[in-house]
Image 1 (cartoon, rainbow, N blue to C red):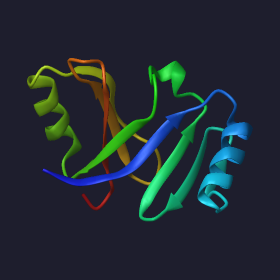
Image 2 (cartoon, rainbow, N blue to C red; image 1 turned 180 degrees about the vertical axis):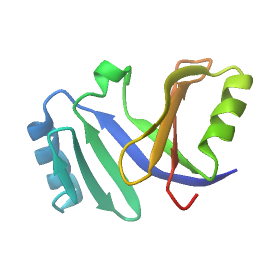
Image 3 (cartoon, one colour; image 1 turned 120 degrees about the vertical axis):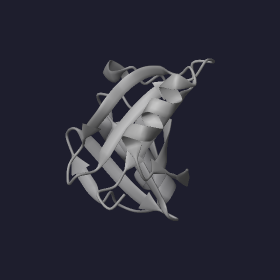
Length: 116
């Protein structure tokens, strides 16, 4: 079971250009602005820019499904035939992410906040 799609991460090659584009699009400054990640919040969505995304295998934007138990959800997706892309890892503050590819090559992200 999920809590829905509240996060999308874009792999970017030029972080400064991407940051300028999303600042113009969303009409707001980023809440996180680091060399390894830029994040925006807009209309309940978390929009992230990852300058290392392509190196991690991201071929386009990745929607992240918010789940209560990332390890159980990841295991279920792998059992259902998904291909692992990124194993569970902590990206700071206890927030866990993982990602897989479905049979059509689409990327599916999972995100678990510290509170589940």
